[in-house]
Length: 251
Length: 355
View 1 (tube, rainbow over the protein chains, first blue to last red):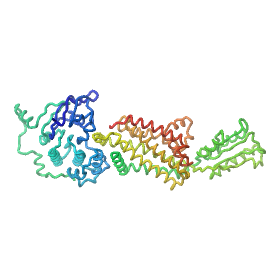
View 2 (view 1 turned 90 degrees about the horizontal axis):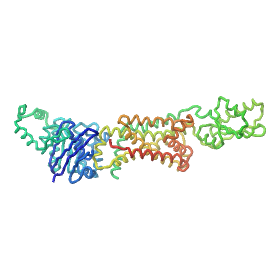
View 3 (view 1 turned 45 degrees about the vertical axis):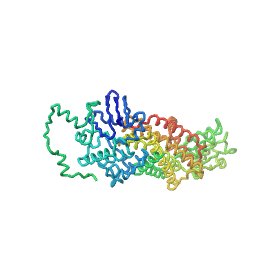
């Protein structure tokens, strides 16, 4: 029994169809990627699952709960990181996590959460002056506040430098080790390859293909496709990380 | 309950950390009050003299001459009660009673003014002497009786201090909601809250309660400054009057916070919300009797003024502050403020949206 079941989900805005009948399942403990260009309908799909938007038609079930009818119960078992990360500007990191733990009636230890995402030293700092990577990590800490079964990450590494991006990858992998199910959207293919067990490729509101990254690559090469890129033993990013190190810079 | 408390604490922290909010809701009204409270608004009510003529058609000569006098403005009144209440309000500084078929040998003209305004008596007395002299009835020194009514009139400062307190309730109520919600919406905070299991009412109620606490504190602070620095007396020793002021500031606070919420929801675009808020508050600043009595306005404007909620809130606070009136005796003001509260609250509850 998959933990997330999506059946023929549709969302229309006036005369624009953002999502045109999407169906997929996600198994417990899986990292599932939604890939697609900007405007493909990734965020709308995720926001319907998070209970922020109502679908025009179709059905979505998370852990036996209907996301529309049992919206409140669903929100209690999921952790959410939105695409544009924003919190109250005039509260400190600690106060923000504390406030959200009250909203989720959760008893999580806030210091532990902050340590886990590497923000413990900054806990007294206000939200406003934080770097992009720090804001992302704060929103991860907030997403973890209710010890959720399912985590939704919407473009978690967009705009981050290579160090911060790798740090985010490590965090996401550690959540999978904890047994959490993760749905993430991205338009970085190397990110999907690194993290996702399976990916759905979405374009114009429809899923074109669902499979594991390895199978998708194999399928393409079997069809006789040859990349025009030269295959090298390392990428430019490897060079960059090798020269500048893995440690985070923003602190 | 914990959720409400969480939002109340968080909202209050953010309020006190933002310098602009402190400036507009505390510093600005205090300064306005100090400036106007100590301003010498010349001739605020001095030229207005009430007249009660007990003759239907008689005494026309005296009345005509008084009307022709340029140093005062005569306002005709139907009874001494009306004149006393005008004295209390400050729309006149003294009034003249002319008995039926006045004749200097048998009857007396009575001039009444307030304590501390004795100079008014002299002005009016001299004027009447001049008129009587013209009638060649000199030597009628006893034909005028002078009275001082037991009215504790505090002048313009007494008028302005409660007025500014009411104005500050409106400004804080409306702007603290419009600007905060605007910034939350722009920051995308509302969307993140929407993803939590709470209902919108938690957030809204928490925010409103934190602002309401600030509004009541602000009222207390402003009136205390009025007593300590401007030197007016508030409540006239009547504890029920002070309670009524707090009660009115809570009613007014909820009323204007609701209007602020309704503006945030109804504004066609986010940027137009502050403009709409100004459009709502600006007429009330000048037409609701904050800086001067609405009696000074043209008649047709007074009808409009009486439709505005701030008019009644300011009047209620003023009646309690200056004359020690309690909730029962200010029932019209309390009632209309409450009616407005219901209207505003219904609109804001019906129109509220997360984004």
